[in-house]
Length: 103
Image (cartoon, rainbow, N blue to C red; front, top):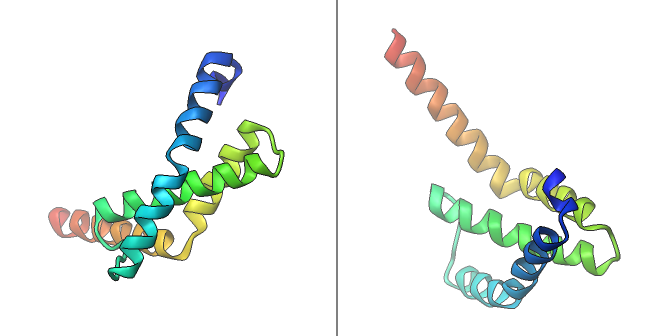
């Protein structure tokens, strides 16, 4: 993430992610109350972004560097059970479609 070396880019990314933290908490709490499950592409993207923001802010609050916080948040999103299930399912569906189209 070489662009994080630029102070303006780094500060802007940090501000964007920290400003949306509280609204994301409220949104996700409400969606979970309503039975939300990240099963479709849009809902999985929303969940992944929300999780990324929460984990990024958490790591920054722990005193980690921004680049490390981003990498850790990214790894946590990819390894989250709901996200990895979604990715596995969509990857499988894509492979199945291609195999059927080639046959």
